[in-house]
Image 1 (tube, rainbow, N blue to C red):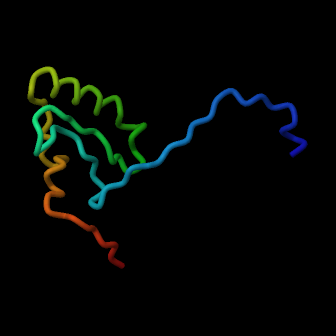
Image 2: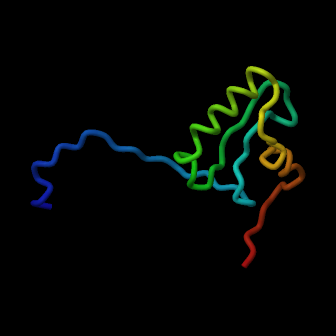
Length: 88
């Protein structure tokens, strides 16, 4: 396009948005293996909530607990869900 002939591209970003079946992120420790901690599936809101998630994850890893409840975001809520089907 002629209008963009002299535009200098400085940086680009590309990525895949992670969505969960219940539209809630997964935040917290693994329910199967000691050690791993998860923070993913932000359903298009990751940029907006990442500072709070980072602070919460740091608190969890450093102290083993958080000042906010993470149970609603546990990966364990998907236990037994081998295949998810879209419903209309």
